[in-house]
Amino acid sequence: MDYCEALEKILKSNIVWIEAQSCSGESINILKSGCRSLENLFFNSSPFKLYSTMCGEKCGKDYLNELLSQKDFVLVIEGAIPKGKDELCYVGEYTCSQLISMLAEKAKAIIAVGSCAVNGGIIRELGYVGVSEFLGKKVYEVPGCPASEKMMIAAIYYALTGGAK
Ligand code: SF4
Image (cartoon, rainbow, N blue to C red; front, side, top):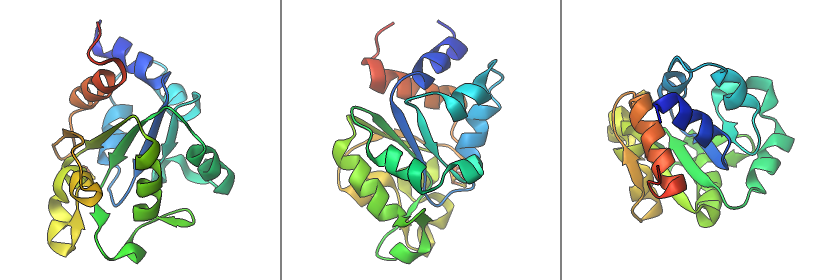
């Protein structure tokens, strides 16, 4: 299986992708991976849900509620999380911290993509932390700035399938 096939497979799976404090580098990296029909799958497939600055007007209140009602999903987090400064990062009506905490409770696996999500990255000195430190537990991690699209696809595929071929 090449990585475009793996990507198509994971985008048909139940994934919630949240962009916290980020430059969208990981979302952009996946979108420019060169795989056919990717944009349509990425933005419109169901039950895959992306909450990113890149989804524009589509990501209103109803979309956010739909996202919060998801069950049996893998949670992918891009970007850093402000620790103790919730007001610095909002996703719709929730702070990034609130939304990620709620989703993390229900997720069957959590993957931090990009160095900002792994350890706070370039804004760590401003009080931002990575997903593992924020949640106080181990998560899958894909470092890099931006993280490699192939490594992100591999990590999500592994989390969904346990590494099955
Ligand atoms: S790790 Fe790099 S590419 Fe990813 S959100 Fe942070 S600054 Fe942007």
